[in-house]
Image (cartoon, rainbow, N blue to C red; front, side, top):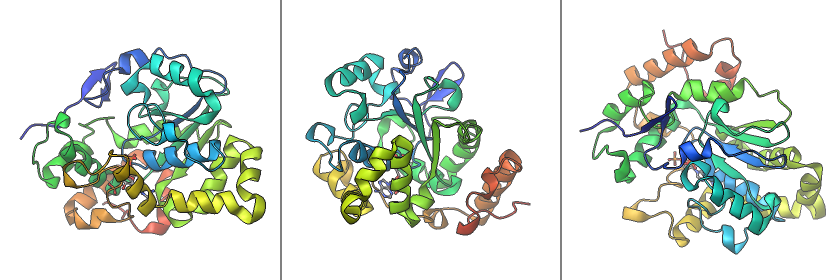
Length: 296
Ligand code: A3P
């Protein structure tokens, strides 16, 4: 059994497939760029699909059907800056967002560029990361069991590094007018309200478009980005389902951690959660979901 693989670039633990991180760090953000930046497995794909539909009148144009590197949103650290620039030339910047798995400090900056961040509770994120890394040989974890993976994940010894530091880097900018922070759990609880929030953040015209004709386009986007619809779309496009089990749409629930964690592992997360976040406000964000104990 070997540790999860990553590449260290400027001190950041970059996913092993992200061959263009170095190049992407010199991408010059433009005034009207839109980024979706998440810690891996927090709902990136879901946000990408919602945003692309909002930007395209509720539809997902054919050329954005593929979720991979250069599909619905180009993944900057994977496809590199030239691919993003080329895609902007082809489609204009108002048709898609750029995907990042970067903390605030390393993300391309422009004072009027917009940044959408999705956060998800630490325990489900860890479980989702485990299943993701088991699917792809490049991570090198082989058939490692969850409990072994947990030790690496909680120590920040895996792609994107420490979950708590990464999310705090964005949370510290939650009041910036060009940063929108979404919670995966809130999106699950009320997709419609969160889709409207995204549209308002993108511009009132988008929100008006969604709610015209008794919410016609809003209802369409809710339905077409539901977990079931996403799972089908990813399978149909050949993106998910490799090796039998779909991945980017695996279970899509709140609370799968209860099927994986021991009491001790849960307590270890609780402790770190409070040590890293107490006093920041982030420690209150999952109160109503009964996920985190006191951790003492
Ligand atoms: P699980 O592994 O817990 O099922 P990312 O896109 O950042 O890699 O995140 C993947 C996680 O988001 C997976 O979680 C996946 O199932 C979930 N997901 C993807 N599409 C979703 C949707 N439409 N609704 C809810 N969850 C979704």
